Image (cartoon, rainbow, N blue to C red; front, side, top):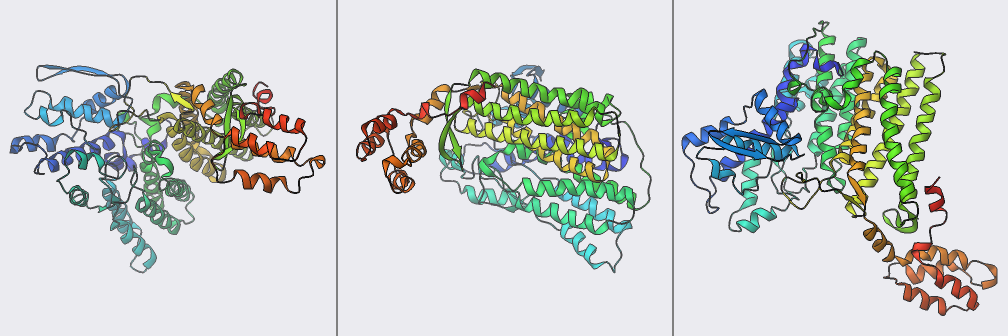
Length: 591
């Protein structure tokens, strides 16, 4: 068992809302409702649907375990089958949303509705369809056993949670409705968007990027966490679960509203764990009432609330065999980090001599080599593994609380390095300095040209969940280590998968460096500080010449020629190029 919440009966109610199967059912529900809404729009060439066809569409979201297995097969392996006497084949998508869309095509194969899914770029309306049901469950639990009329604060919090209105969007791939208006410019798509979103009880948000900003969802998490804090008492078991829930709620509230460059797969990873936080809240409420837990083996991985016990089980199942965290870290976690280090080390040596533009504050800065950038992460991770080994292997205090706390703190530090690595490589991919290998799978559900850096984003999202739980373990709950370590292990494996699917784009890296000769201003002003040149303030001199201007090597050389310095000094400065201004980067990369 990786996570307690998937074997405690009190949380089974949430499997209808937070399991992977429930998520896919909710997505299909929104997708089919969108299809029905489109059928009512005049002027887009959508034929009128019969009542029987409408009923068939409305029934599609009620998926069985077998249906969900087909969706997962399309996503992870590819699928070939027969429906109503017709053969149908889908290649592996590596994309859960696209797999769901292909499943709908499969379900409609051989019906009069086949035409509805041909050449349609159907936009999935994401997120939060079922949150209102969770609010209702939470409200009912509080009213039935916890809140008295005199406790005004809790009553107010309960009402705010129960009546909370989330925002949502239907605004196209980047918040512009560009494809909608390009194809059908005469349709008022903004009004269509508003009516469609409001039909779910949400408030329509027009001002979005690729993703809805999640500000309202973050507010809901904070309200729930505040309620949990208000209920903390002298019940140790209840308090443990309340604090674990709040560790997650605070982490989610901090992460989800950050849409920096729309790393939406990291958001998706985090959102898949919303049920984990609500589950721990329900466990706390039950413990607070003095009720005993009952345990049962989960019947299907598709109904599990924790992704570790369902969607990602294959990546963390090794943890089930260990009875203590020290054994698991030694036998499973450290070897996983070692594989990441090994990959980075090989790349550091391979590209030790390849110059690249460095960036500070996101701007062009003193060049380095790409091998040296790989090496930085090798050394950071290796140092933490060495520190971890020093704590684990001494025989003294083998299972002490302090020792376990130190172990989980170091794992949290390693996770932060993994996150830093994932974000850096995400940015390298954005700049096209690192390319992702084309495996033939779906990159984006709407934009065919994209290859989404899914593994780097998943690693970032899993670090968010892992560290929230790890800090809780270190403080007050040593029993939940498998779940926290599971997310940590998943982050390491995800980042390795991402690294293995990338290749260095030497041409782009060289071009980017060549286009920024102004980075030599640092070298120039340092050289010109020598007393024999008698230049009052070389920094200001170079600042005035380079800052905010388009600088070329020719302009730099002309600038040097204008200086009253010896000819030998001029030749030294003019001989320098960005490609050769790398200091000891190559030496460090090869160490």
